[in-house]
Image (cartoon, rainbow, N blue to C red):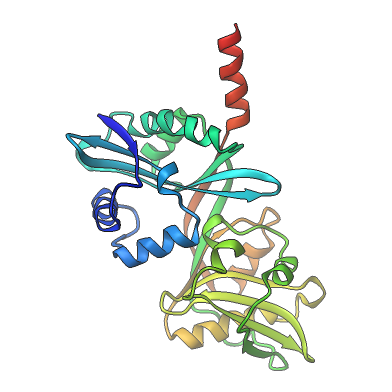
Length: 291
């Protein structure tokens, strides 16, 4: 096996590899080059800091990684890892990270984070072997919001130029990397709706209408328990005309999960958020060398 970064793969080659690696996956995946390009752009994926596994010059595995400043430290995000079926069971994840971590170290990356479906036991074992630890359980919901839970005094209208620095203050928990404000601000496919009560912005919802997916939502603390969130969800459902979904809910107090179930949304999938502390790893490596 050979290993090299991915900047020399075309988007068509990478898309083909991505789709083949995710055949028979837990959730159906079939990306187009345009969708993968948008994902990489919006999530800040760096091909020259992402790793590929090759045999005879042919790509058979990959790891896409993004890098951002989060809470004053440099964080890498594993946006996707895939290995062709014939090459699994050969510790590909561990081997690719052995090649990639020195590159991330050069970027002063303090930690790597990722999400993995809770039923994907082989992937969880691979990440654990690489040093990752579970830090949270993320929950995914879908369904049809109950029409009765609507506040008719709420006016909902699109926010054409959303100020995420203001909207971020409405939340009490952080969305995952794919749903973070830094991601959403780069996506033309995202529409943001504001809920106004007596002319004041009381809550918001950011979503992808074609996918019927809600990416972010929050109600300002002083406006909670006034059916503003349920009104936003029902409005979005009426806009899409389809069952809606929202992913990676990470509210440690579980108020959000309780709210979603109360308005008629059903839990359908869980993911684990896992992290690898590279600062501790660097210290351990340095200690071994000095010893």
